[in-house]
Length: 222
Image (tube, rainbow, N blue to C red; front, side, top):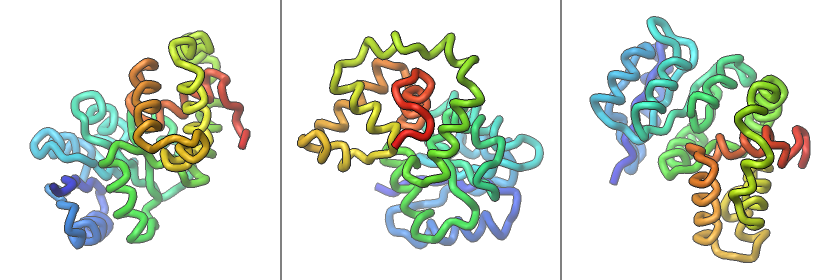
């Protein structure tokens, strides 16, 4: 079954380029393109895609507001596109529910890989820039988040689930966590699912943010 994608960018050449790359894959189908945030939200409502590639800076409605609406109204995974690896909007986009982001100069293979990873329910946590973002999110939001995300909240987790969350925050994949625990990837997926469910989190990105904000992992820790 094909992965259904909507590509939203106000630059036609960029939008068309991404669409051509994705359409060349047998397992990916671009169901619509959008030139602004409002069109992107409408396209998601109309076509119910699996993934939305969403530019951050667009006219009519910016990518941040579009991400909020799409994440609140659907199960579509959002991947933000940005020219700058430290774009201010990226912080807000992750809080809005985006599963990650890509720079617009992303390599062809990395773009395709990102769509497949996000469609499978994972998040873009491996790149160094993402870890920098997580650390910066914590520094910017610690006081505000303290009232909502406390160490006591982690009491709902088992010891193994807490350790799973800690390893997620370090950017480890399911396979790497399985190796660390000497268990199967299926078992790790169960642990991750339990963590998300018990903490009321949307995906792995929000789990990582939670781990930092609760103090389970310190910014800059390896």
